[in-house]
Image (cartoon, rainbow, N blue to C red; front, side, top):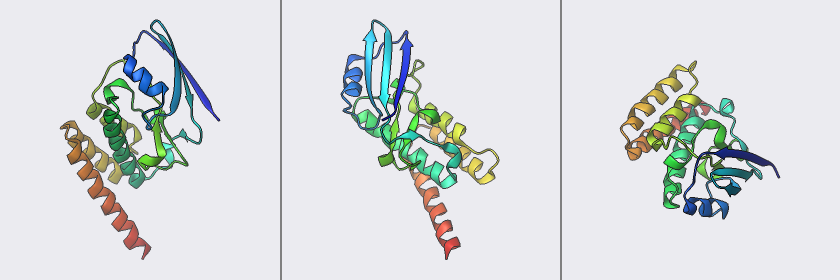
Length: 177
């Protein structure tokens, strides 16, 4: 069982978030424990079968699915009272089983967001970080994604992703036949 240890200071998590995370109530984060001494934390994460996602191994289709999965996980985390403003959403904090990007196989390493950025802004930055700038089709798709996400309507963003995921699936199916 792999473990990751992170230390931080100068931040205070609300008690209810500490409880939700340390009791692993919210299933979308890596299992963790934390020790708090005043405003200093030590986070210990258990990765189990999850490994840091390898963005370089993902094609455009998989990146679209990954973006959709992160949006869905954000919605589910909010149901557990943990809003995206409370944690970072970065490629290096996304863990997966066998690099599968479906939300059932993804967990987020919880690390507090000092800046408390809104989800819309985080998902735009995330998309830019995973974009292959040498792939014109992917760059265009992600740039359009970012434009739609800037407006803050995640339902429209999911519709855009679903449409393009289907389009890529249809193209793959027609090329295979």
